Image (cartoon, rainbow, N blue to C red; front, side):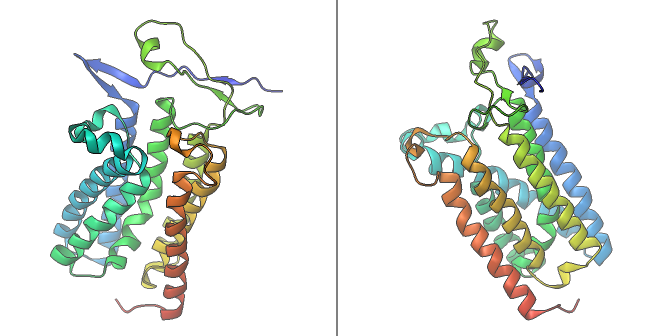
Length: 275
């Protein structure tokens, strides 16, 4: 039988002065860079105007970061952040919510579609979600490096023992390890990578983008369906979730899964669109 994994990774790659350069930020940046290259390939495939993709990158980055930060603050600890609004700006201290990031991207793409492409939002989403699974997987690997967002205790051989007193440990204290726990960051990363592979296949091999909303709908079902299921073995992020039938992450995932089902049905009913 395999031993449990004692995870002692340092969240920081290196330090410049008092500022840490973390694996989380690097993973986020790498995901966006690769995502940009994939979308650029789509642009060339469909012979679309190059300025559109540069604008899309800016809109997407702003929507992701602003939405994810506001989502964490308002979904998980609204009383604190509404009483201390300046704390919302301290994004470097951590606290991003994927559901908020998704909503932020939806808002940003609304304005992108109105002001830049003058195409439907679904036209954009069918392209944008293709690399998003990869970006999401990279972010979860960043969570792994940060010893955060892990699961319930488990006796399975691949359980991870995470450092619970991370800040004190980095200042020289002896580490205090969690019980062997589900590495839910890896579970989610694996699901998101599979979703990424599926969306790449749908776009480049099956040309599913010709059925407007189909790739977007499948992405929503896969990502948020996986999130809903994995939350059953993930620790609550906030104390108020204790005793809830479903935790906040699950309640927030349900509308996205249902919307995904509707978009898939709509795309299949309407059929292919002309280029």
